[in-house]
Every structure is written in C-alpha cells, then in structure tokens.
Length: 229
Image (cartoon, rainbow, N blue to C red; front, side):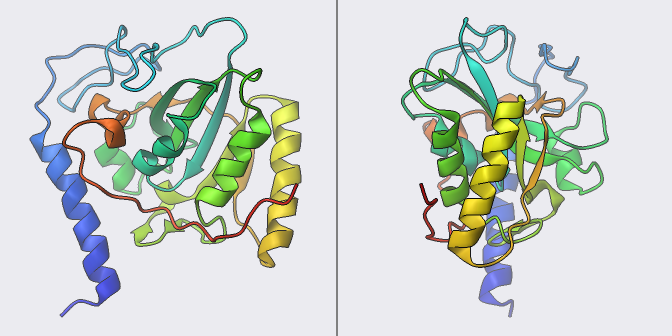
C-alpha cells in the first residue's frame, strides 16, 4: 500500500487530471500574450476576458498607475488565491515563466521538460497596497526552504521565486528575504530574478479557486514564521 505522502500526491494529481479532462476543447480564440494560440490544447483567456473576482481586464495595457509583481510559490491556483481578493489588487493571472520552451501548455510544464515555474502575476495599485505587503504574503504563504517542492507537489514548476520588474522591487525582495531567513533560522532557496516573459495559462486555470465547482485544494505549506518589520 502506498504511504500517506504518496497517496496524497496521487490524490492531488487526480484532482488536476479531473479538471483538465472536464474542460471542453476550445475552438481557438487567440490570447494576446506571447502569441499563444489554441493548437489542440485548451486555449488561454480571450482578449476581452474579465477577471472573475475584480471584473477588470486580464491583459495589458493596465490603467495608469498600476504596477506588476510576479511570484512563484507552488501550485498557482493556491498562490493566486492569496492575492486576488486583497484590497488594492486590480487583476491577477496565473501562468508559466522562467523556462525555455515558447508558449508552453500545462501538460508541457507538468512534464518537467520546459523548466517553467507556475507563477501568479499580480497587477496592483501601489497607492492602495505596497509591494512590501505583497512580499509579506509571499514569504508567509509558503515554504521557501524546499527546493522544487511545496508539500506533496514536486517538480521544478513548484519552485519558489520572485521575479522583479524594477530595481526597487529587487531591493525589497532581497531585503525581505534576508529578514525572513533570519526569522526561520535556516537557508531560503527562493530565486530572485528579473521578470521573465509571462506565458498566460489556459483559461480554466484563471481564478480557479473562486469559481463555482472548484475542487478544494491547497498545496502550499506555510512555515508559520512571520516577516519581521
């Protein structure tokens, strides 16, 4: 009989497989991020799609004053769920980043052959919510000490990463990493890199946890530590 850990891992994969299987094939609405189009796989959100929670757009250009952040912290259903209902959030999208294959699909990324991370892109109003507040949610919302893993979710797509859009974001990411590492008392393996190209994920992944009929799942494993001020 499989161990409890193996059984939990297989259960999570069955949930994802069920979700993939029950989504109908698209007839081919192109996204406008990275030239991604439906070629027999499920399609990305249509260009005029609206965020299920905020009602705002899913693609740039964003309204004046908005900024972007990008985080990888395990399953992107779970990480998006931490951000999409926060005050000051204009929109969120899940996708794939920091890999080598152009226009990857979910199946491609899960194969482990593309090198991509599952990420959430957060579009926020810095006058309403600070980037440091987003970092606090990031550090406290998952375990940044486990390479390529969150709980039973294993693979390079589940690695911890902060992908910055400015020198200010880079500075805050590195400063908060040092603080959180001190609070934990052990090394952090989070990669901090310039924001790579964002490949938006298939439509059925977007705001998954907020939609009716969503299968309850959270693969994130917070450490319980708090980010020191």
